[in-house]
Length: 155
Image (cartoon, one colour):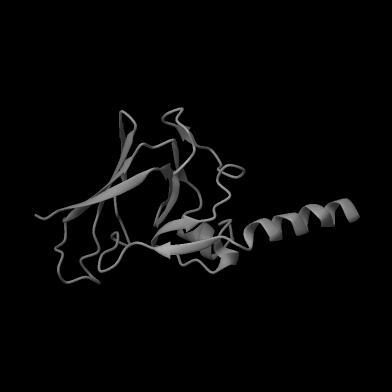
């Protein structure tokens, strides 16, 4: 029993300092069918999706955004989806107060210890890499990269 408690308390201590900085201001992914597309070009990972024209009037239906993550070490796109987050509590960050459907920079991340089902993009040094997190309707995107750029394509 004590060994089980040690592991539980260690997990709590390790996650207590994680903080989330919301990066999507005045834009977001389409909430119902963002149609996320992920591609890799060298060490960069590109994520394209439809924008939320319902909430943000400066966008039209069919407008897209592209996030380009530079010098990417690894990424993943998978569970939880919105149902897994809300109903089944499958997000490892939900207990820390994170909101579904947003794009975050994760400060003091535990990504070197906990990063499930990742796709390795490069074998670069870990210094200066950042943990990015985006909750889309049908899945969660996480990326470890140096930085990112955001581009809008209007129809």
